Length: 127
Image (cartoon, rainbow, N blue to C red):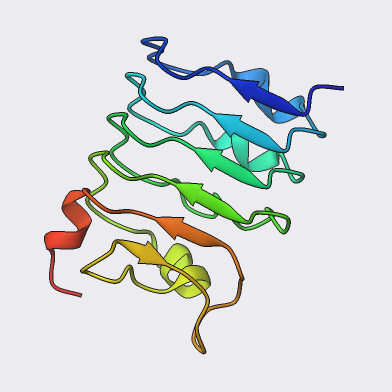
């Protein structure tokens, strides 16, 4: 059973679609690559606790991407090109704090996961 994937600094431009079949995956470390998208298949990894996808070229978060990730504790998406947050993301995690880029549970959020979005263009928009 694969429980972690460490693929940082490998110049990856995409991930294999079969990633969603890894039901025991708890850690996905894909930072500092050339990824432009988070494949929706990742959202099928319901055991994921930590995702490090910082330092890529990711432009958006797929709708309902985090919906079934009930074990997620943290996700670092900092230093990407994310411009817009899907409505379901905002409902689940709230808006990022402009000064830190961190989304975490408060009275309006439905999860305890911490999402880091600093150094993304989304933080420059009016919220």
